Image 1 (cartoon, rainbow, N blue to C red):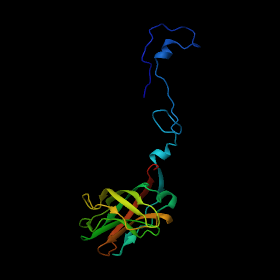
Image 2: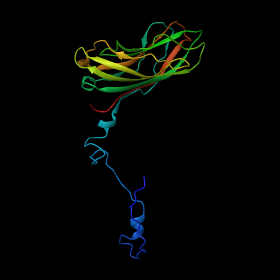
Image 3: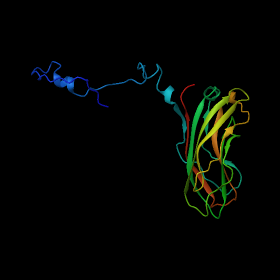
Image 4: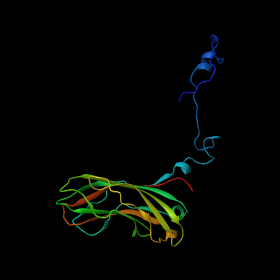
Length: 217
């Protein structure tokens, strides 16, 4: 972003380069801004991370595949959030997950966003979604905003669905307010998957799982 003076000097330059000459006045200026300190009128006196938030978790490798079962199974990539982070009114988290699935025949897939101290509280349930007939490596993805609605030993989390794509189209299954959760213990977020039919060819993997804390409240 160029910064110039509103006035442009037409005075010829001096041969003395140790002086600030008209050419120096007229040229673009270099401006440095320290985003970790206060810039009056632009940013509050706080670290920039407290404004835009921070990453709490990202997986370093793909999950193990969930296949050959029709039992609900939690992916082996989960994100622990401390009570100090989540047991705060209006604490808000962005949760992103994606991966690939393959199938034989026409099974359905149910994904759930789970939370709570032992990753057993259902925060969102896709319901049975068609995945298509005999697909191979079809991408799937979900995204949520989860907000602490009520704190304490019987707290509540509100889940807002941003995006859910399991089959070839986008599903619009809504989220909502959870049953009471002991937020004083913290929460472990995770995604579970359930095939309608057990087959070695019905397989789903999660290659990305990310959790962000959005700003301070």
